[in-house]
Image 1 (spheres, rainbow, N blue to C red):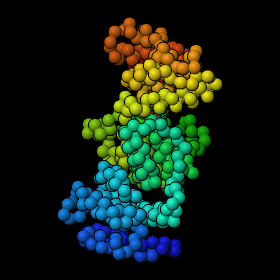
Image 2: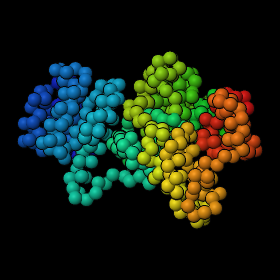
Image 3: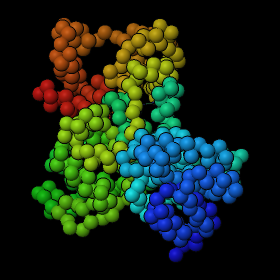
Image 4: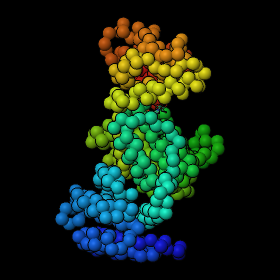
Length: 450
Ligand SMILES: Nc1ncnc2c1ncn2[C@@H]1O[C@H](COP(=O)(O)OP(=O)(O)OP(=O)(O)O)[C@@H](O)[C@H]1O
């Protein structure tokens, strides 16, 4: 048995069975574990005993499901002892409540019914966090720093980044929602960079770009001879991510049979390579993303509800760029500097009239579109200051589009055809030109039969 941590723990829950089971487990790992059924005793206990971590139930009998009482007690505890680490017990599926609790100052949460390893790891991390912070109370927190550069000071982005920072240290599954080009991939990297797993791999998989037949082999690996083209053993992406984070992008695009396969892996926390009967345990943090309305898909039985429950412990919605206009100028300036350096161009500023137009435009391709518009403008501009004409040029594509009238689908088809022509059929280049991900372009090529 490992030496117990010298921590003092308090468990507050009105269910005696929960108290006994949690205490039995934690007692083996912490020096002192007290428990209390009656939440009214919390102020007395917290005032008189220096607990390191308090494991607090969200719902007491007075109020069975809203979590309101849990929030009140959380506030009281933090009023009396702001330095104590509070971990919340929440019922399975209380996603919103868990996010709110973390925003309200809890360090983490554990879902009931709990897995012993998970509860223990969470309590130990909470203890370490609190203990580390107390010793270095005047020094900056020793949280991992992210080297991912996310620009955004709009209220919406501040909230997104705040939630990301709070959930990064937990192992909670995160589902990132947002239109194409809003920065879902970047945010996933940021969460990984802020997490304890940041020294391990971050593996990003674009599910929209994997064919149905290769899905299993790509994700779970295969053994030599498993199918005609399997000439060597292959490690799947889940195994590559072992110990780190796996980011599954475009999750809304996979078929129901593949959803079932993914769910099995997530439930069993192990993978079996195609053609093998040996299972390998995996320890990965899961971040997923989609640009589709996944709740609606679940309601229409296009997406499995049980899989959704697994992946959306925390949901983060990235707003489209048109809804965070304050971020447009800082982003444009950031890309200006980036590309001026990259292409060694002496372009140093954005004219006020350009800034105005940038703010007015609605950016259907979001930040990716702005990024490419700035890259093109920096390369082509003739002066030091970028003007509206440098960014909003009427080029052949736009002219041709205008001639087709206002049928949106027709316009989209035309723009894509033009971009494919311009890039000689190179999908990566054309996707870049259009401000779309490769997968998003593939889907459209299929849709329009181009
Ligand atoms: N807040 C931001 N600050 C700086 N760069 C950003 C920001 N958001 C996105 N970007 C950049 O914009 C581009 C598109 O972002 P990203 O690929 O993360 O979007 P996405 O939502 O994952 O797109 P898709 O849905 O098409 O896969 C990337 O080059 C990314 O680095």
